[in-house]
Length: 382
Ligand code: FE2
Image (cartoon, rainbow, N blue to C red; front, top):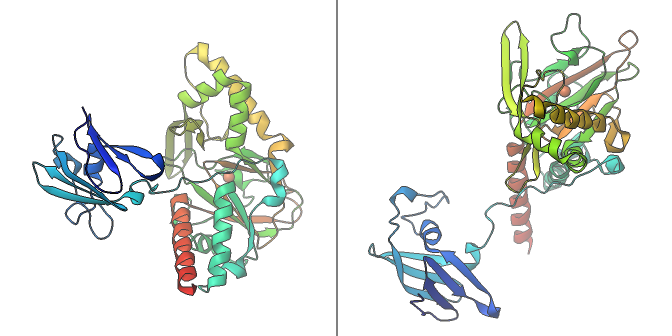
């Protein structure tokens, strides 16, 4: 039953645990009372830092708002029986607290759009360098990959580049690691074999969400790098084999890595979806995947979809190919963009890359901080 209609500038109706606000332009919104109580921004409920002080376990679910007032852009109400006063800026009630990442799916035709920057133009704290870095990070986040040229050819530079926008994820391979052909390798990355497009370290939980690879030497013939948008390919599998796709999402498999001092294992599906059903994470690495185990009625369907995924990854229509020269570095979103390489000649010339891992939340944080700095300096100039 509707109870209260008060205020100026807008009508409010209270019914069935919901406050209905009738705003200008015939617009109306319905706000559940407990959502409103939880979002109170008074100094008892929210710290000046923006962090919440109100413990949701202490909210009285019987509380009801009285004295509901709308004045221009402000909603004010008093919760009874506590006599707790809440004031809200109406526009802020509807602002999205965090914008979701904006992924842009791609295939081979996007090769010329691969985000690219030069190391020297993004180094430093002057506004031009910050703006270049911000543009490159935004584009890299959207495509899930990017290239940087002119990185100094020196040991460990790859990890220093990662600190320009985040934090290195140190692993059993170290803060950074070498990728080159060695005698008796424990990892096939350290051979001259070609490597099919894959995501790295699916045997970790959680996986590193960014990988950087920096070229120090590339005089060997071959060893071209391949990038594939795994989310795009997963959607292709979904449209061609929906039942198999469903099993790739619902059935977990094991991934392992072992050497003398390490025994890593993770159990996870090849494809994970977000709450809207969109692909949000891929683990695909035939080198470390263990034989899948599931009811035999499902195993054939699972395999059909798995093999389709593997074949699609090899199709040129989905691949961006790049040849890394010394000083070139690429970065990939390791839950989205698969990377691989063609075989190279181990007997003539040499190929030496260094890699490191980092996490995409740090990259996104840097994008937000640089965006804030950019908009505050634009405001100062006004
Ligand atoms: Fe790799």
